[in-house]
Length: 53
Image (tube, rainbow, N blue to C red; front, side, top):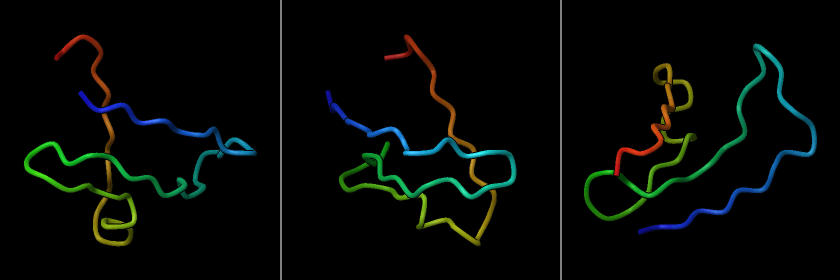
């Protein structure tokens, strides 16, 4: 189990504004994945499913 603590942004982001960078543990294998790894390459969809562990 991995616990990740995030701090809320000082100001909420609005539609069309870039999301702040974040890093999450990799789903497959060791390491981590950052939003900045994909910035400018392709659209990113982050889906959080509750209860699927």
